[in-house]
Length: 162
Image 1: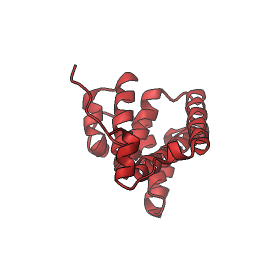
Image 2: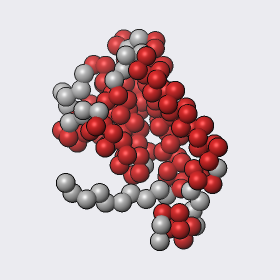
Image 3: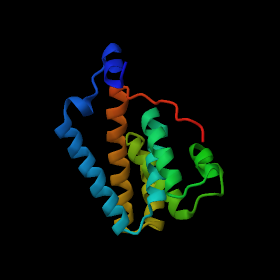
Image 4: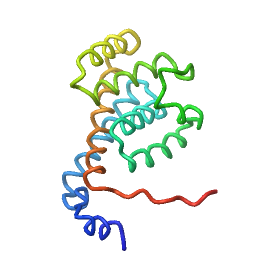
């Protein structure tokens, strides 16, 4: 049984496959956001940390799988990825990364006004306007991809050990 058949058996529609034009628009948005982040001077590894933290909060297994591998390709370490969920309790992230992670969390939990205000103030002290905008766009886009994968129940399959 392939992934689409498994989704149907579970009563799910892979909305990315069912509505490819909408999904391609989301992919195009993600590509534009990556370009905005690069133009703002934010490295791919930082954006992958944002993608992972948003996906952790949302509990999106598929996006966690995809972006863990992308973060490793971008030069992230297993130590930093392993402690990302508890980043506030570590000393392994820079001030810029901490500001971006806090802003990503606030973007993912917009109903928490106090979190949002604290994160935004902290980000403004460390990030430029362009960097702030890029991080928020990265979190917004990742939240959208999380919803696509969660609602579609995209599968995570084992990768052979190397």
